[in-house]
Length: 409
Image 1: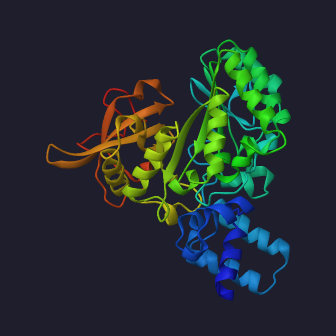
Image 2: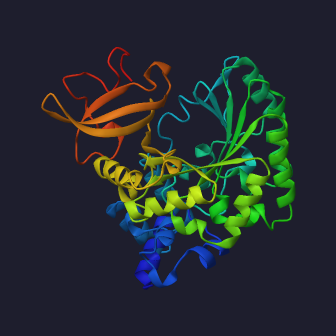
């Protein structure tokens, strides 16, 4: 790699987080195919992730050996323009208990509470597309984190409609089994909580977490305890490319997790230059089902960070999804997509149609802040350039992007 290319990557990494590990480097990346290798693009900074003017600014500061404070100030200014907390994550999703905010919790949908353990707000390696990038840039004001399970339990007691708790990050499985236990075990005492989910990339980036780590057996015993308490444990595994499932240790890790009584559901966004190919999606979903994993969501790249670099158009996302979906068996058709996790809820693109002389997207809320929206179709004008929900305009003379009769979303 030439010196100017290395400097460009350093410039991106000064703004957006970069972290990898020996497993990713040695087992997942095909270095003969770099820079086009999909796992390299998934994990290493790319110059196009910053706007040209921002990249030039950061390169100039690094080339001139500018003071650390000047580099940090420039990086923070650029970050502030990258929509660090999309879809109301802080200002809307953060719940109140007796009029007091509970930072580190999010309650967007009635049935589901998100917990961000303070010790789990990093990952074994970082995906460059990740919408949680503000967790990893070392700016405390941007981080979502908590360690107050007493308030969490009181909040759950006040909200018996919550049946599912998602422990997320970062990656909770960077924590030791003992630390994770502090967050999991109290939830077993809450009758209304039926399922505990753990969002993780560990199957892909550090499968030793379930096999060879010193406390791997302790972790699996904790998983088994959840199942033994009569609650479902769902490992929400982020799997982006079929290569992540190929190493033998991943097969062993999957078997051990399933033997502990956990269900593994798999999700990922559709990312340009990484998995935006129907053949890749078919291979990924087939390999998931063969391994006993449940394909769950195929997301659309969110409106934050380097979205413009990684996003594909909504129409292309739908066409790829439909192509791949038509070529897998019913066991893989548990996958739902393409899905946008937008401010009002999870919006699925169900199809393209001609209605009353207008070409439209057919859309549906799979989940929503307003439960009246869930499951009801609605329409948006088909814009071939649209990459996100806010790019869409109402169709058929309607005034909003919501099912008729439910009010604005």
